[in-house]
Image 1 (cartoon, one colour):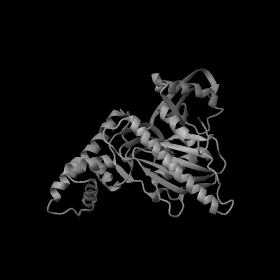
Image 2 (tube, one colour):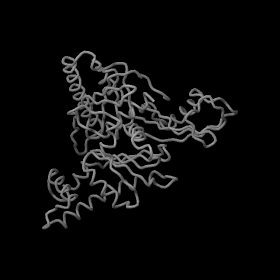
Image 3 (cartoon, helix red, strand yellow):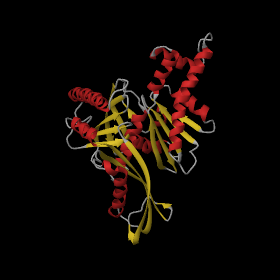
Image 4 (cartoon, one colour):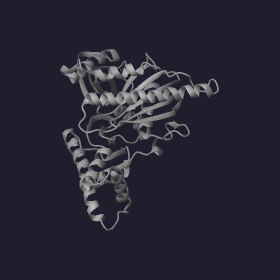
Length: 385
């Protein structure tokens, strides 16, 4: 999977599937212009305790179907009212963008030694990548599907080469990422999307697209830690010298942390969110500020502790990057506060819409979503560059 198809201007449907929400977006892709968001619809996935995976799949598929219904209705209304030729009337491609728990991504560096010096081509390197991919899947080949494979770097004699095809070498290092998902859920999602298009349906890792997008937005960031806090999960990527070296996640996100806070304070979810905002603004009621602040700090430790455990499990041979990029479903400043308190030496920054606004375009009255914008930028980069 060194390259992709569909390089002409076209209208695409992006379906962003996270742990607590499904988002659908109509996006117009053109070779010489930023991705243009025409319309966005969000469908929430209600949280329930102790539910099985089959129920989660069921409610998620229902949310995907609902999102597609709304998108198709919006497209129909636009087709009946727009000036002919303004936009394509049909969706050419459906892009599924998957986050945890729907997908697992692994970063690999593969060292290849050929019997003798050969001329390098995509065809000559693919067998070694395929063999390594099969090792990742192991005995679960009948249950898992490889949905994306991205080669980030090819090195000859320890030198990174952007134009490596046709070069001769005996020893080659390949850094790449493989993303896998459950075959059953992939097939169900494919069936759902076939009422939009039965030909061009693609699956992507949200984290992988984000890292490609960030390379465009922050080209000076060669090494960094990317932390994305979803509703129910937190995803983490480590980039070292422009290469993905680790992907991971843990099951505690914005909503989970707020539920824990509401239970500890013995109040409802909405009050807990308000208290968190007051805490960050320094406006807690003085009569019980100390007790509330202590509970918030203790709850904060739960999230940071899970992050620390994940980073230890990564078993990195290099120190953590000094740069960190954080984005959250909500309460960004709170998670930034937690992280900076635990790691004061890290140069942490929040991902803002201002960071990406020159790289993607959102139509008027369309919600400005940073992560979805980064993912669209990643798709555009893969397709047209």
